[in-house]
Length: 199
Image 1: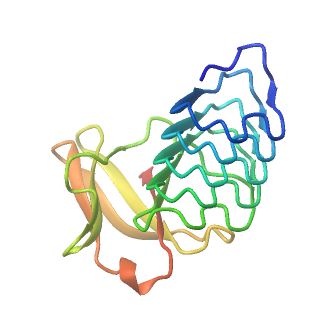
Image 2: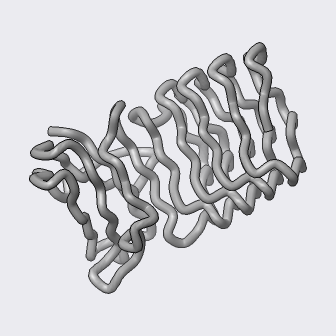
């Protein structure tokens, strides 16, 4: 589904119940995604929200059951209540910036059991999700990530996105350009989120 470049806002309930499209191309002209904008769009599998968007409305992607991943641009300052609630196939949300200032309740409730949020600066280390090592393994929750050789990367975790208190878990030097990260303690928390930063 293509949205015209002339559009600056996606209005409330604009595409509610559009079950056919598997992807949506949101142009860089859009600054706001309204309430219930893509609610019940069960065919969507992935969404990229461009850097131009500053706000995502209440229930904007509610019950998009086919959605597996979402990339959120650097300018988003607010995400509304239950924006991605009920996206039962959603395994990852990738924030290209530091994340929103205002974060509504229940934003990612009822996502996939392995759901993870990533935060990263521009040109972040790359998370490998399709190499067979991403997700829950006997040693804990883990994944490979890659970056330029000899880059020092700090992996941090947070248990509450409302407070966003990030604690360092591991500091790594990517001597070969890649490294496997594993968190054996992830089961000790009701939810745990991860982000990367270069040191």
